[in-house]
Amino acid sequence: AQRVTQPEKLLSVFKGAPVELKCNYSYSGSPELFWYVQYSRQRLQLLLRHISRESIKGFTADLNKGETSFHLKKPFAQEEDSAMYYCDPETSYDKVIFGPGTSLSVIP
Amino acid sequence: KAGVTQTPRYLIKTRGQQVTLSCSPISGHRSVSWYQQTPGQGLQFLFEYFSETQRNKGNFPGRFSGRQFSNSRSEMNVSTLELGDSALYLCASSFGGPQETQYFGPGTRLLVL
Image (cartoon, rainbow over all chains, first blue to last red; front, side, top):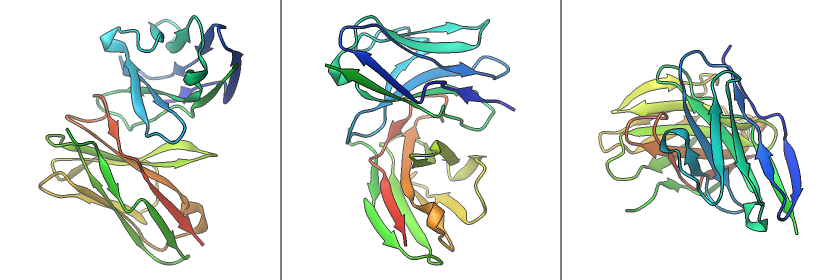
């Protein structure tokens, strides 16, 4: 069965520390990879998309096809990064499966 | 461009009742997806509609149904409500489907008593 895992349900880091939110998927083929973020009292929104290869709010995500991972990284966490993060690998033919989400808390 | 809107924002129902939720996508978007969000289960995909046709379906019972109109607006219906249906229901729209960036609405919070 195709699965998405985000092993950390909760992740706490200190402000200024590096942060990495892990995402592993078990899809055959080449999914389109997204990270979505939900800040407190805001709607879910796109953070970044692999195909864009952009850095958004200091975050980057590297696709590792060998490990089938798409981890989200930021070198220096800020308090405003505290949010819920969802990994979303999409294929053109399968059901939509978001990862279970990681709640990031940045400690001042 | 106006964002995705959902109505109503809050709803309280009792077990056994049915409920209809509405979603208006961003103008020009033809795909509307529905999700159930709960603290325990996270985001779970319900179904996706594209050009008035259900194109994808998640693993929810038949009590959950939906439809899409010619203007791309979508409705979701839940019949015979159960306590476990209490959740935030999100809809998202995109041009072509979940393989493109999805734009989420604020959600409808449903409480079943």
